Each structure stands twice: as structure tokens, then as C-alpha cells.
Length: 207
Image (cartoon, rainbow, N blue to C red; front, side):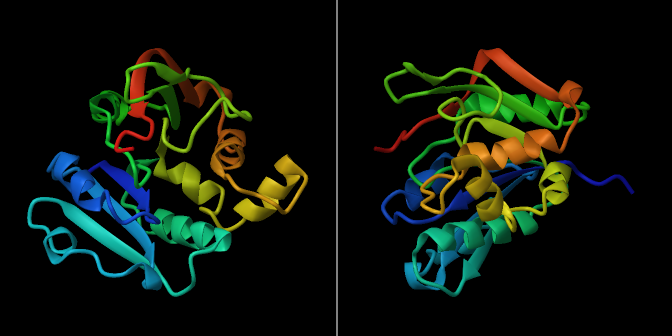
């Protein structure tokens, strides 16, 4: 039996005001799985979202306060609850770009394990061009990555240790490029694709 290749959308919740807007803008497709990651103290997900009959929604909850380490725990749990296929991170203040869905459909049976595209602001100006993971050159949300890569790097379990090596300090406020560096180093160069001609992600769309 052939396993369906899924598109896993991981949203790590901190804000409360955009969740319902996000739900309305996510395509209601069988190949999409929306993984919502939250702390117990965040509160309750509306039932019509949690028990949606239109969209496959998985709510992952960690029992801790909203701290920096909570981000790591939420991300790790979300990554471990993915179905086989590809994944990307959708910030809790953002809207999926239609080209992310198109890119998944185009490359889901390819050998590319990491696909990096452009990211734009709400006013259509380019925020980031497509480039390999480096400080100031990549965001959590402009990468489409295969689920087997997350497994190779042990999901988000060792990210703080790796981020310390990258930043040289424990005062870490962002995990985007340390995480993608870790993923990039786990695969062959030929399996990374830069989409220099394509915007695949928005930036702070709801703000």
C-alpha cells in the first residue's frame, strides 16, 4: 500500500489573536496536516478547529510555562507528530503563501530534501531571498523540508546545544538558522534546492 505524501504545517503558538484567521486561510485538503503546538497555559483551541471535519488538525500540548525553552519543547513535539512527507513552519502571525502549496505539489516526489524560497512582506516587498542557512539569510518559514531530515537531526531535541555552538552564548532568542544549518548539514548538497525565482512564504502577514 502506497503511503500518501503529506504536507505538515507546524504552528508554534504564543499569540492568541490570529488562530481563527489562520484556520480560515489554510486549504482544506486531505494531504495537509496542521500541527498546532501549544503550552497547557496557553488555553483551549476552539472546538471547531480542534475537531475540524474539513482539515486534519493535530494539537500538541506541553505542560510548562511560556519560556524560551517552551519553544524548543513545542517545536520538538510538533516535529515528532508529523506524517511522512514534507513540512514547513507557519508562524502564529502568518498566512500560508499559495506558492508553498504549489511547491510541495511540484516537488513531493523529487529527491530534494530541503527547498528554500523567497519570503515577502505584506506590502509585497522581498524580505528574504533564497539562500543557504546563515545568519540573517533565512527564516523559520521560508523552507520546505522532508520529514526524514527532521528525523536525522533528532527533531528539535538537540537544538539548544547546536544553537550555542552557532551563537557562542546561551542567550538565544531565535532558532531559525541554527536549526536549518543542522538540517542542511545532514543532507547532501545536491538534495538542496534554492528557488531564486519564487516567493514561497509570507512574513508577519497578520500584523
